[in-house]
Image (tube, rainbow, N blue to C red):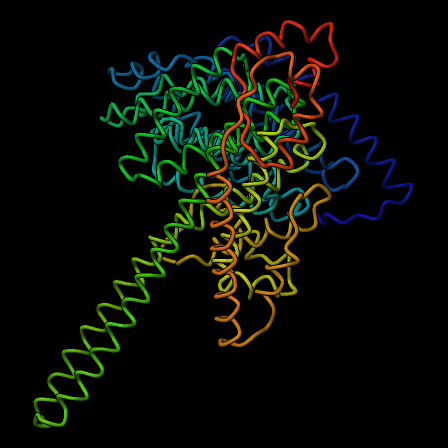
Length: 595
C-alpha cells in the first residue's frame, strides 16, 4: 500500500470506519487476554493468533491515513506485540526465579515456551521492520519498539550477543532522530543495567535531564535507578567501585527526588570525601564522571521548581565542584602547552647539532643518522598524537560539562534571588569558563565561524556525548562539535548571563598566526593581571562582625564598609543563630540574613 492517500471526504469516511473496526477488534482481544491464564495460550492459541493477525492487518491499513497513524501503530504495539511479552515477563518477574529457570534442567514444556516466545518476537520484528520503510514520519517510535523487541529476545531467549548489538543500534538510531528525547537513553540504560550498572546509572540520569518536568516516567526512572543497587554487576570484583557507585547513587537520589537538608548534608560529606580521594590519586577522569552525574541530577531538580533551601544547597554544591573542574582543566591544558614548547626547543637543538655534525662527517654516515632520526621523530610524533588525544579528552569533557550546566541552569540563576556567596560562585564559574574557552579558542574558532549549525555531524556528536560513546581514536573533533553547540546555546539564550563580546569574538576573528599569538599574549597578560589583583585583595584584613545588633541597626553602614574597603567579613554562627530567631518578627533580621 502507498502510505500517501489523498485525504478527501471519501477516504476520510473510510478511515473513520476502519478506525471503528480497529477499536472493536482491540476490545475483543483485550477481553480475550484477560480470560487467558497461561503464557502458552497467549502465544499459540488459535483464536488469539487469528484475532491478533486481524488486528495487525487492520492497524497497518489504518496507519496509511496520517490522521490515525499514531493511534493505529500504538494499538498494534500494545496489543499485538507488548501484551504477550508482558505476560511472559510477569511469569518471570523475580530475577532469582528466572535464574533458577535457566540453570536447572528445564522441562520440554518450558523449552517450548521459550521457542514460542522467540518465534513470536521474530515475527513482530519483521512486521515493525516493514513499518519502518513505510512510515518514516514515525521512525523514532518504531526504532524504540524494534529495540525493545531485541532487548526482550536478549533477556528471555538466551542472551544472544547479536540481539544485544542490534538492540543497542536501534536505540542509538532512535536517539539520532530526536537527540533531546529522554526515551532512548532510558531504554539503553535498561539494556545495560545487568552488564554495566555504572553506564546504566549515567544513562538514567541523562534521561532524567532530558525531562522537562517530573512525571510518571521520571518516577519509573527513579525506581530503575534504585534497583541498580541490587545488581551483581555493580561490584565488578572491586569494593572501591561499589563504594563510589553507592555514594553517588544515594547523593543523586537525594538531590533529584527526596531532598531533605539533614540527609543532603550527610550525603554531601560522603561525596566530598570521595572527591578528595580522586584528587589525591590524580583520578580526574573518574571525578568528571561523578560530577557529571551530579550536575545532571541538579539540572533535573531545578526544572521542577525546588524550594529556596533545596535550590541553595544543590546549586552551591554544583558551583563549588565545577569551579574546581574548570581550574583543573586549565592547569592540564597549560601543562600540555609547556610540554609542547619544551619539545619545540629540543627539536631546534637537534637540528643545530645535526647541521654542525654534517660538515665534519661523511655522506654515508649522515644518511644513516638521518634515517634513524627520522624514524625516531615519526615514532615520537605518533606517540605525542596519541597522548594528546587521551590527555586533552578530560579538558574537552570538563568544558562540555560546565557549558551544558550553564546552558541548562542559567535561567534559574537569573530569576532567583541569590545569596552573595552563591552569586560569587556562579560569577566565578562564568569567568573561569570564558578563560578556558580563550585557551581553546584556536581549536574552537573554525567551527564557530561555520554557517551550518544543524548538520548531521552535530547531531551525531550530541548523541555520542549523551550516550558516553566517544571513540577517542577519532581525536577530539566530536568534543569540539558538542562544545560549540552549547556555546551557541549560551550566546543565544535569554538568560545566558555570559557574553563573549570582549575577548571571545576578538580571538575568534579571522586573523593570521602572528596576530593570534599576539592575542594569546594579551590574554596571558590579562589573566596574570587578574591573578595579581586577586592576590592583593586576599591580603586585605578581615573584619569580624561583633554582635547581631550591629547587623540589625547599622546594616547599610556595614554594606558600605564592605563595598568601599573591600574587606572580607566573617560573621560567627552565634550571631546568625540570634538573627534566625528574630527573622519572623523583624524585617531587618531577614535582610541581615540575606546580607
